[in-house]
Length: 71
Image (cartoon, rainbow, N blue to C red; front, side, top):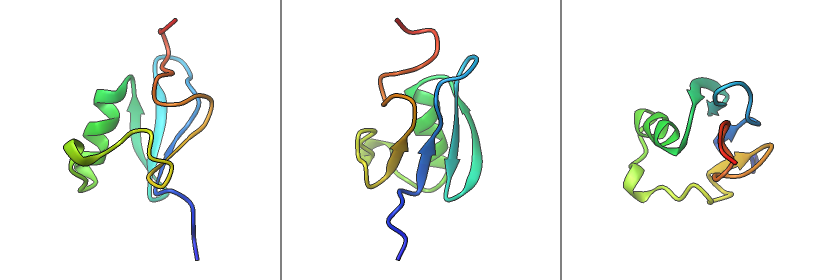
C-alpha cells in the first residue's frame, strides 16, 4: 500500500516550486494560486483543498507559506 501523498511540492528554486501530481510534473507554481490551479486541472475542487493537508500534499523545503521572493 502506498501511503505517499499524491501531490509533491519541491523546495523553492528560482521563481517558484516544482509540483508533481501522481508522479507527473504539473508545472512550476509561483504561489498558492498556481498550485490550486494545478490541483483543479487534476480534478480536485480548489474550494475543498487544504494546502496543509499532509495526506494530500508533501511539502519539501518549507510548507505552504514558503515561496520564492517572500521574506
